[in-house]
Amino acid sequence: MKASTLKTTRSDMKTLVKDAQELFREATSATGERADELRNRGLQLLDSALTRAHEVQTAAIETGKEIAEKTDDYVHENPWRAVAISAGVGVLVGLLISRK
Image (cartoon, rainbow, N blue to C red; front, side):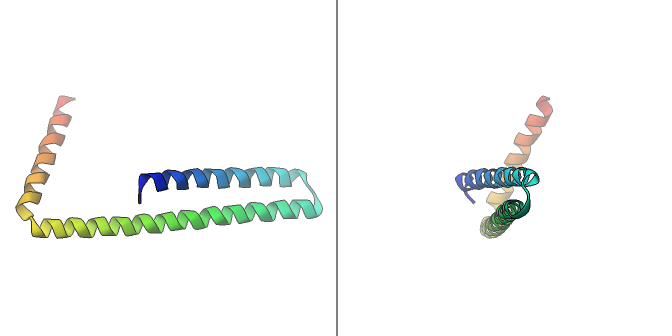
């Protein structure tokens, strides 16, 4: 999942939740049919937010699986290069930790 998609989704989720909160606040002061209408619209907004969150979660899981598969393939095809990269990362992390 791309960073721009994640930012857009995060923004959409915040907007949906804020709109739903506004509708529920408005519904508390309204009565009768108007209150029911506002509550229903708020619930629809929350349902939409949940659906979008589920879609994002599913996409993130699929992306993670693809990355894991590609990494696994790379390590199987290039075992010594993978060991060298891992060792290099370990040295860098060790140097950063030892500086503090």
